[in-house]
Image 1 (cartoon, one colour):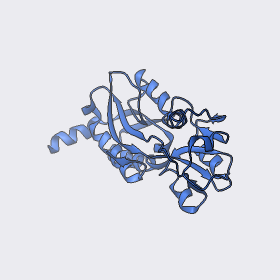
Image 2: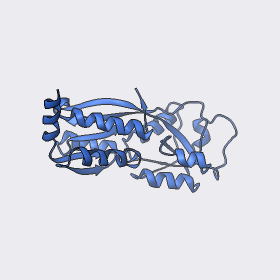
Image 3: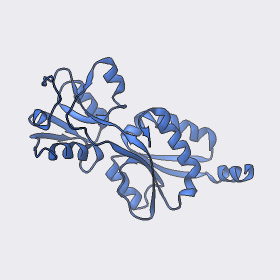
Image 4: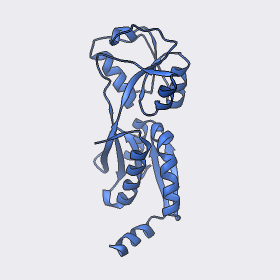
Length: 221
């Protein structure tokens, strides 16, 4: 077993083309990358940050080796391992005046809404929430930066569906509030997707999963 583990370590060299969505980059990669550098000094990481739909496309095209993303849409040659759930909630700054009760889609219909581009998990969760009540939001604005979406919400520019744990510091400080809604926004499924047989990256996937768990971004399945 020790010989096998050693051989696997020695095999981890060259360039690892790693993709990740922004929420993972902001909370988990600062834990993961130092581990990879320390354990596999001959491994170089070429990191790509993008929305999940674009990471899925790059996996399908063979442009990435591994991607950490939500709800991947990939071909048969890509192996997907679900590792946890990521909680999503409607959020707003305290400048936004809303009814003091559980909110319905019509309560947010005329507000500026900020979201990630379609067909991201965040966009689809937002769109399905409105569609379930047969409501069409009037002012939907898209941006591919979660950090900017968070800043817009903090400044009271509008409302957004965002990862709850990503926003935890702002929630705890009182800069942002989680909106109580009658119907819950659909959560996302966090997954690690890789090209080819999963055993090829098993040791890396374990480290990725550990970093994700420690980050608090997701809840285990």
